[in-house]
Picture (tube, rainbow, N blue to C red):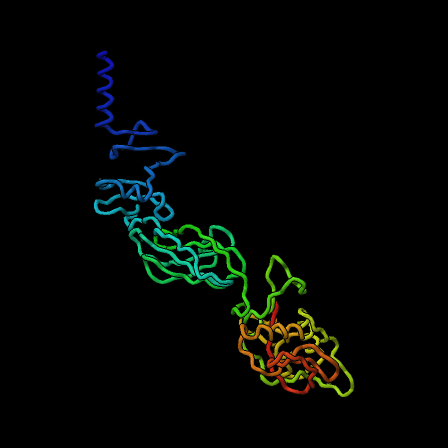
Amino acid sequence: MKHVLLGLLIFFSVATFAQVGVGTTTPVTSAMLEVKSSSKGFLPPRLTYAQRQAISSPATGLMIYCTNCGPGEPQFYNGTAWVNMMGGTALTQPPTVSTTAASNITSSTATSGGNITNDNGLAITARGVCWSISSSPTTANSKTIESGTTGSFTSNITGLNANTVYYLRAYAINAGGTSYGDQVSVRTTDYAIGESALGGKIAYLLQPGDPGYDANTQHGLVATATDVSVGAEWGCFSFTGSTINGADGTAIGTGNQNTIDIMAGCSTAGIAARLCGDLVLNGYSDWYLPSKDELNKLYINRVAIGGFTSNHYWTSSEVDFYHAWYQDFANGQFTNGDRRSTKYVRAIRAF
């Protein structure tokens, strides 16, 4: 028993007063502790930022590895503040941010935002909302960029597609990294007649029985918000009985081919079809002169679309070698018009 007690006393004496070597029996004389290995490293305590901050009265020189300070970094306490291993300012964790539920939802826009409740000691360098049709969007996806630091902010999201589910997250960035709020989802609405979208005004939505109708995907016609011309000829009036090759479609869905046919068969500048077919407006270049039935849909919805006058508007539907159809927007009546006469022109595109 005496020998056991003597051995314990010697052990505690060595552990307390002598040098300690791990992986070596001859630690260097200037070190109280030497850890030696050619295949393993030294692993300090791994703490989150919150756990590090909870240490009461840290001792000068106390060393930890902060797991969520930026991408993670080793830090030590210099007696005044936590610093990195080069003595620079230690990273903190990214900001704390929440996401605001979406509101003011239309077919192409929504309003969201967020609230940064804590910058964790480092200035906010960017904030906003990011979104995608896939879950967990990041700043690599579409995003808004809002000015400001901590506190709440509002983001107006634009450029969305109709009847589509989007996922949104607020984000905030400081030197500690990027953080995201909770994900929220939003479904945009269908397009509505008269709504400003897709380069102009939604003029007509395809119905069952219309060519191109799809019960699962909304399609229709978009009209320019204003008239393309208040006085253009249909073009290429002929005394010899020569008609345009094609350009005789009257149904919904035929106006684009009519326009192509007219432009191919009549080189006259400034005619109604060419004004529409050459039009580049609001990022779209696929405008055309509407067929008879397509123009009639614009007449029916003229109040919601706006910008029309009680005048005669050309269609792209040819009647014969010197007549084409036009519509009176005062009463909706169609008439065979002399292709040399000048009338109003409104361009459309399909979606």
